[in-house]
View 1 (tube, one colour):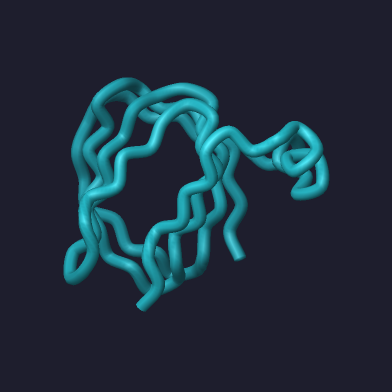
View 2 (spheres, rainbow, N blue to C red):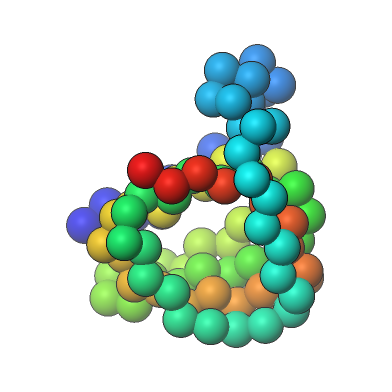
Length: 92
């Protein structure tokens, strides 16, 4: 299984090419929960601080403001939202 991919502070041109600003926005308060990715998700973090720990393999990954993140299809993990999150996201 693939690992979480994090691209820190991608250029505005890269974000424009991906169409990030047109993706829906998801928000969540400080909390913890398990999550399973039925399909790949790409997201761009606008606000927040999150520690995502893969269930079976890999080290915890910290994501925050300005990170472009790809979560692989089929990954089970635990989300620990340390500061409320606001993100653009796209599945598939």
